[in-house]
Image (cartoon, rainbow, N blue to C red; front, side):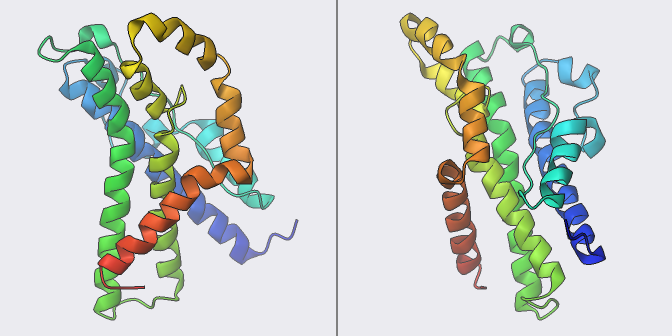
Amino acid sequence: MDLTPEKIRWILLNVFVLLISVALHEFGHAIMAHKLGDDTPSRQGRVTLNPLAHADPIGTLLLPLLGGFYGAGGFGWGKPVQWNPLRISRKVSMSTAKILVAIAGPSMNLLLATVIASVHAVLLLRGAMSPIGDASRILQFAVLTNFILFFFNLLPIPPLDGGHVAQSFVPYRHRDRFEQVARFSPFIVLGFMMLPPMQIVFTWPATFLMKHLYHLLGVL
């Protein structure tokens, strides 16, 4: 394991990007549940942009660090936001609330990626930043990371956000069968995280979207 000062610096920067991205993702869940009437996230201190409030010691820090040190890439997760559908305002159905809270997390990653790419594009077009410099490299990494989180979390597999959305659309007569299949979902999610052929399902659209977004913004 060849750990040069340069490599350690990039590993720490990558972990920082993941920390911010995951924190904003979890904040999305928390603020949506809060806006819908559930005060559980607020009482637990999750309606905040403080990254440490959403960080999971293993999923947000340890695992990405180890992945970076051993060249396995960085992947992680944040501390899940707890919320109570029974405390949601009666103006919104429970099924709709579950969908809104679920998609709020990935939506924040989509928003963050778009904002970073837009700022990056402005800096490049004005000549304030080199397209091959370290700053550009870390900004592109941040954009790609958030697009990956967006597509990965929308996979229709519990306990991912897409799984919660999919469950809301399953007819009640088939819910038991869905829950039986969901018992094996952690192994399926692990497969998508660890096996490169399965990672293509979310890395390819993330790369495609990043490339075309920058092209739309007039750079790269």
